[in-house]
Image 1 (cartoon, rainbow, N blue to C red):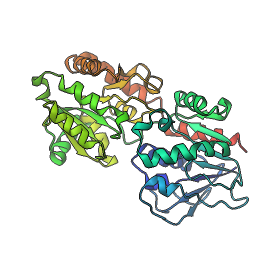
Image 2 (cartoon, one colour):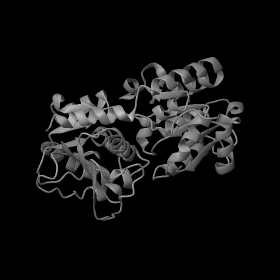
Image 3 (tube, one colour):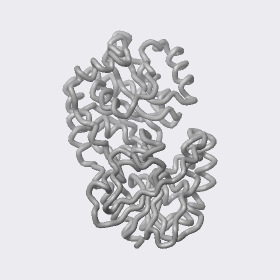
Image 4 (cartoon, one colour):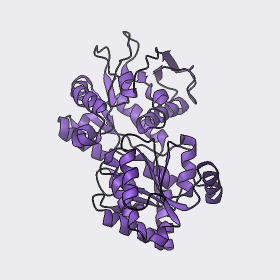
Length: 372
């Protein structure tokens, strides 16, 4: 089978959920599938870990750079007759060609713009709500990342369940246990963070509930906060000043630290160094950071809503994200109970091993075969 993949996100969006997904998908396909033929549409042939040749061919596209990623990928790649048997667009179908020359599959990660539109940027909201219904009319199969998202897509669009295939994601190979002392030394030297810390990693969207986390943290005893900072990683978007100002209002401005964007290769150091990883999101189609944290041995506190219990099972401590008091109480329990914290850490480490990108790639290939 000749499979085409729009791989632009692997270059343009690396470090985000969709960029990581696209990169790991094609990397693992390149690593173990020698039976099918692949045509990858890429803006740069020198993508790390992807070797053209044998059954992997690369079609370079013009780098028509726009203001943001979603504007870039909304320009479809051009498919020629008989070039491929099936075409996959991993970024929610955005950029799917209007002219259909073969069966189309898309990866639709979630329907957040329909469920929580107030938490999505106006440009992406407009593009998603306008384009996705038409995209679904033109695609033959959907891949999604959790059973929760599968049912959510079905409910929102009445898309047939037998044409929605679930392929779970996984932590990348860079996430594994390391020396906490060495990781702390690096973070102290390069980021000036000296205390132990509670960690959050992810976007700054209101959907991630960073305000609730800051409020819960502020309820911890002062003597605890003096020794245990709250570190919030991520690119400082529009919401950053809201979070910073709230920390000021709650009297914890010196204890809540915003290092900004951290390169992907440094994220494992933060996961390994943290005392607790907390992910109080209101809504996730999958939620990759908790699995990354688990793979590094960090004890995880997670939202109990949407896909999170499906993905994390009994390996996390669950909270009601709408209740800062519950977040505070679970944080305090993990801080004070060393035995319980070690138990959750060990459970998470074992659980994260259930997921791997090779399995994701294989399940993706099998779902595409149903279209040939």
